[in-house]
Image (tube, rainbow, N blue to C red; front, top):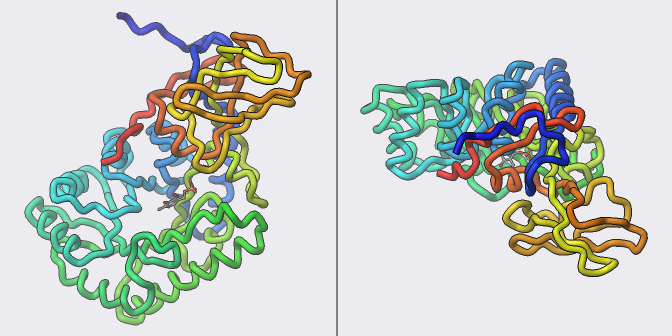
Length: 365
Ligand SMILES: Cc1ncc(COP(=O)(O)O)c(C=O)c1O
């Protein structure tokens, strides 16, 4: 079957469910963040786990981002294949076969990976030596998220000293993601919480430098803390991801004025009762771990439940919706919703300007 071009379709003509990007909003978000980072000392290395799409990463880099972050090695492979040559994997790579892929990828760009375990560091070093590369690593420091990471302070210094003895590794710094703080809307409170963690990271950097260890990179930050951690002295780069699209969870945080650029277009497939409409999108098309998605621009309509393939809306009696009408949902979590889709329909002035493959969708290894 020949591919039928979807470029030029109006929003109403797109088959649903379909993930939409509002290109004007996306570009404003990218430019607003770039503008901020042109004025502070820290740099932006946006997290590509959000969009999983090389063209968006290239747009971010074009206006100043120093590279991208990835969460998974296979995401990094997609980014490198698209010509991006500076990638920080903000996660541990542990399987022996993955370590081989990692060091091989380092032949094609600067790939920096997080480590928090000596045995894995040794295995990575040995594989790097065999492959003929020096593998850049950052030590992941547990600044309070209690996920991965070496404890801050002395344990990190002791670990760093051991890493320096490994011939295949090049220790370039620290990764201390402090968390997104979705639960702290107030800016000053969020600042206090984030900076308590940033302080631990910078104190640890100081101890490393006192021990004569050079620290080039100190990476932290998220969309919810970009203008907090981004101004914390000593932090060199920020890992914000969601700002490109935003979602209803992030818009609850005060002090974040990015726009919604991602919606899910759905169609009303059933109108069984005056107060109920059903759309053709459920859990296989939009996620709800952060709460129900929001109905866009339909006063009196709320999404009540999601099953696998159905979204059930509760309507006030005045809402006039017919079978076939199109409804947009604003995700509550953009990153996990994106991973459910193969492509974005990118709209400007209500017309599809481009269709982009979400090339790293499902790249979980
Ligand atoms: C390691 C890491 N860095 C940064 C982020 C921030 O991403 P976002 O800006 O989408 O909250 C996350 C979020 O999960 C993360 O896990």
